[in-house]
Length: 397
Image 1 (cartoon, rainbow, N blue to C red):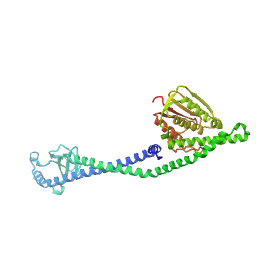
Image 2: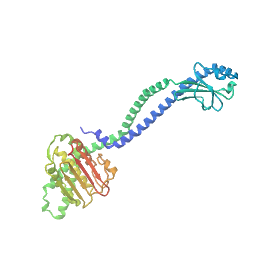
Image 3: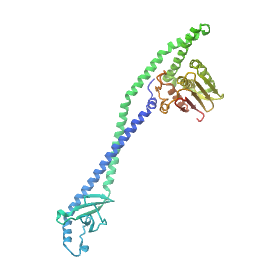
Image 4: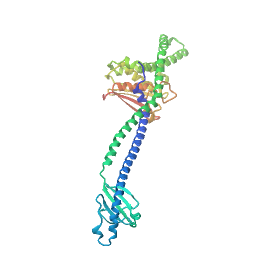
């Protein structure tokens, strides 16, 4: 059954699809990072709030001891009160340590509680306790349990959120690309129906022209019939491409030993009238003994489309060079050449880059498909205004 190929769709829209998923992926990572950062910060604040409450309660029993120590004018160094729950220190209004168990000689009086270098510090302004412009600092080591729990929760819920975002992205991509798939399915259906309708009249035209002895006709009439024959040949080439596109992959699966040079000469003879019509000089260098294990019909389609492309985008009076050896087939033309962006898209199905030329934009897609089927590589060399060379490499495979 004829249907729109997913591989063709992915090939023709690879850049768009890649850009969509790249943008969506970056946005998903930003969302996950933001949520993770906010959650981590909330867990840290919750931990600090719990310690702050505990230290605040502990200070209610410790500050009276501190006030008693401050009331003793002598022996302060020996009698500085020690809290059983926390390490403590006494700082002046400038944040400089006066006495205590902490090694920190300075702190920022504007802070209330902080986590620094693995320790939690709680700062209490003693002015409200009638002690003066001094500060009491409590210190306790951070056990890191809150961090372990936060990271575990982030991994679990972040994974679930990431999975949800991935599924949403997949569903969104299908929703976005559904109209494109439908359009391509309609186009494929149109091509199939068109191909079916073209078969009979095309055979009638070609058969009628073949029955006419052009040499017996007057020059004006012969010239007209030659133009009709050329147009019929062009339509026949398009028809062959459409037949291959819709049915050819299934109708010609077998391989055989094919003399590539013979096929190439045969196809050049087939295009002779088109060469002459455009005034093209054709140079053919085909070394004998190049035998390929390939289906002959598919090799003809590949060669025909490369030659047709070289004719279509060539200039009048230009040249085409065909070189065949044991490693590759090179088809060069003296046409307008291609930009880098165009070179990257020439094998996309339905891609056309000149409004002056006809066709459905399927020829080079067929070339790509046949080359891929046999594991051949394709190289494209082109510069604007300097022509193009398309090479099909089979020697390394």
